[in-house]
Image 1 (tube, rainbow, N blue to C red):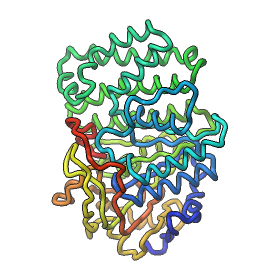
Image 2 (spheres, rainbow, N blue to C red):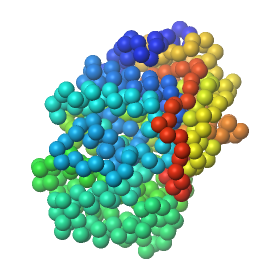
Image 3 (spheres, helix red, strand yellow):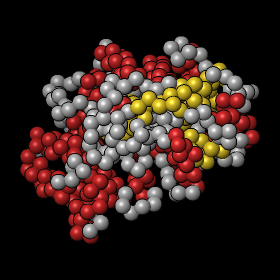
Image 4 (cartoon, rainbow, N blue to C red):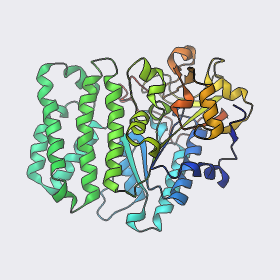
Length: 428
């Protein structure tokens, strides 16, 4: 490994971002993380993002977050006449600290300044890929239709009626939907999505951004309804539906914004790394956005993961509990992370597409354990809760290593109780 690694400069050194010029020709660059609560992972992704935006024309940022939350952020980055302030602050659901942290806030401040001096068509856009905003997305569709076509809004309200009572507790809807009578609800929300999309030509002609927002919310409602039903069917259905939705959202954004669109994706390693090279795909028949992107776009996408040996991490002990700064155990001796630690460099890049990197891919063709920490960290059962086999050099195009890492700094670490967390049972 020592012959393939490239020692990283400080994160605030311009030379750090310049190391990723090698991926500037890709249309999509996905930036992963081994936990949802590590400062270095956020700061490194922010530095790479700034460089790709400033030097290489990347103009779309898509994150593992709900569409309405990200849309509220997008409106703050690209203010438009007639914008209505959001009903509540974005990123309020568990886990708050995942996006409400100082490291990420610093990037948003930079994006706001970057956009300020540019014409509307040249501003960086900001979108969410996830599907956990059932209630907010229903309200988004109804609010849009009420403005442009009140009669269509009445029809949509009737179609969404079967979901209205479950907006605050969609998990319970999934249980209730085991009753065959709820099949009509699935049909109704899908039909609503189809009808809205069928009107794209006339509605988008007046306001493309508002139509995109409504259309993605309608797609999200349909996906979320199916997702919460799938959770009670067991197997890979729920995970696969979620990552398929994230991939389809990304693909639709690239199509909507045209051939000049170039996207940077922020998501967990478990979503970014090609699932075909992990237990997820090989044992559990799960796919993810990284795999789907590789299958669709080949060398047009770069998958970049990140890992660490030890330090501290922001996480919760259980669902909907407050964030804690926890000690991250040293990596296991039988893990890929331990190989990185034993290489002796405090931080480095492995480029598996370079000649030395390709040689490493051949030498490390057998599965090794890889650590995944989501929003929950359970060190007492770490082997079974947070490690899985993977062929990491085939899972990613590149790997960023930070030997010792620190927890993110939350903007607020108290988590208001909101019932069963929407990320259950995955946490990533």
